[in-house]
Amino acid sequence: MDPRQKMFREASRELQQFFKRVGQIWIFEELMFLGVEPERLTGRFRSKSVHLLQDFCAKEPGYHIISCQDYKIYNRYLAKANGYYLADGDNDPNLMVDLLSRLTADEFLQVGQAMLAPVV
Image 1 (cartoon, helix red, strand yellow):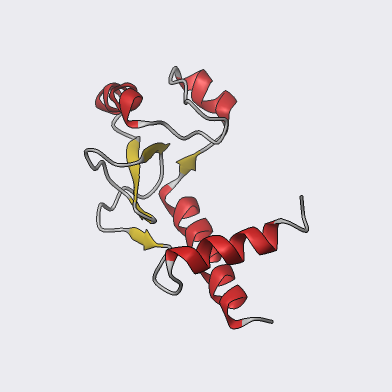
Image 2: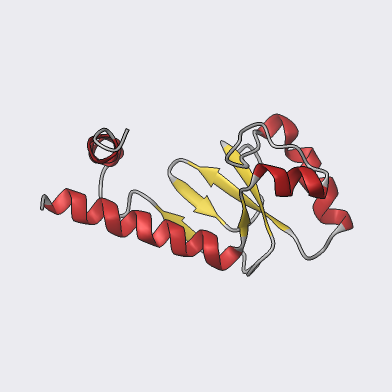
């Protein structure tokens, strides 16, 4: 196995564990049930609708916002991030995943694409 594939898998596993720990809510129907409609079926919100998440979290303190910025996923709200998710798990604001801690952005995209292509 290409060492880059191993690093990609480790980064993917780390991201999966992070999302599980922080309680990322990604199921579209669950978000709709909660009264917040994401812009993507993956449960991702863009910055133009992050106010929906902020209003929801203000009313429901058991939930918090996850922010995505430059291949890093933060377990807190960051203004002007690329995207956001709603979560209901561990809300430690110091938790973070850096997808480029092992590979460059180009390598991450190339290896990910090469691994996904046979599946599709």
